[in-house]
Image (tube, rainbow, N blue to C red; front, side, top):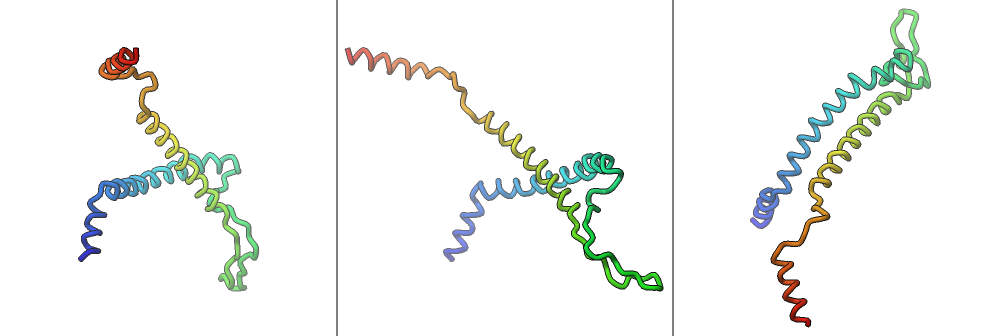
Length: 133
């Protein structure tokens, strides 16, 4: 019974709900960034590289072997680094946008540096100073 009540307490905390919302929003944001990279950024990179699709970049170690009948006997062995390159670009964009969001959030949370002390604090300071004399 103790574990069930601990689990209920854990689930009922606000942090778990915040985390769940963050994961769902993060997954949706990841799809947006992937669409941005696939649809806008990678075509520009392909244009620069002569029309080659970045995700198709690979280093062939052993080419495919094709028999006399035209069928593939053995598949090619290749290091496909293009997909890794595209995923790294996705990650960098997501990390940069999250950095900007956190930076803006921290700027909103920061208290005003030039905030004057409340009137009651000023009054108490005057009383303190007059009692010292």
